[in-house]
Image 1 (spheres, chains in turn blue, yellow):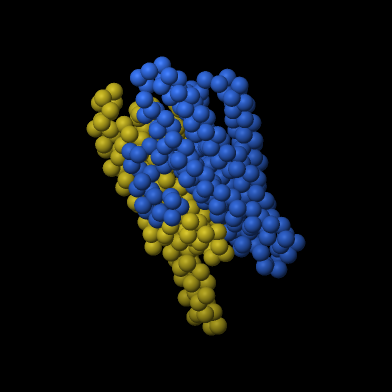
Image 2: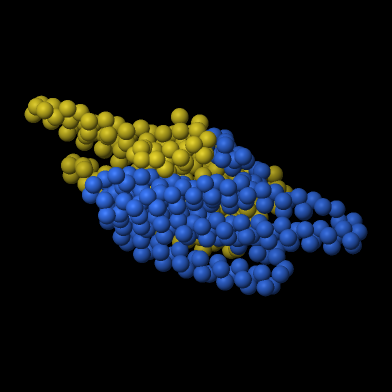
Length: 205
Length: 205
């Protein structure tokens, strides 16, 4: 399990010439960092008299951030796994026509999976951006830099996830799948950029 | 040592209501992730016949990325430590005029230290952005998404570092120090934004 590794060991593994964990796992980790920081701001807000009005909202946020933090760690594993499965498919035999056909099918199937995973990372990170926005607007003022950094990390996870989606697309032959993914990329990119501009403009530091 | 903790445990600690590790450490970790991914791209480029022309450059880059990866882990610890020292200073006694003066001096000294640390994170992350740019332009094409994500993570580290610099400034009374830091912030922000635009426009995926 990558999430059981020490930071130091994980980063050394990430640095190595093993293709996984790579950018997709890094994006998921950034999402987890963003969710964790948002959770910290919610935690620092809860119990403060001046923030009684948002106490319940912050308690809900805390739970949601914890769920995303843990989900991203799961996605970090799954992205590395999905990439390794593509590599395995590429190693399948291709001596006969039958083998070639089976290999191509497996490569297509595994590449789609390796595309959908970072897309999920980007989608979840977009939701973390929205939650971070609430901590920027309503959370403990002394931790507003942490709330802003939570947003920055979640945005990096969106962008990182989408780069990893895009790198897979040239290998995919299913036109309907490509059309669907491209339209999702465009939507997520647009929303993430708008959200970033709108929310960071509310960070008065 | 934070870097000896498992990813899971570190993220739980980051989520807690302990003020450190917080945004500064998160920014440093993003810098370390960025440097690690850049290192991975250099590693994947080294030894490939088609990339013989850049072999030596990639070997140099690999070493530099490793140095930054490890330096960021160090800065992650130091940022958490610096923040804890501010908290300690705030707890000093303030019953007499003499105690008040000594406490204020200590708070100023420790707040300056807690400002210079994330500034260092931002400066180093700006340099990692430049190095990531080289992997985007000259590294192994199949890993171009990883090179782009390396840049995105380094940019998040710059932005995150600067938010943590800014949050400290209202507590600092030394006008010369503030002028110097504000001019450095402006310079780093400008360079990071220009670099991001210029380099990401070269990521053809």
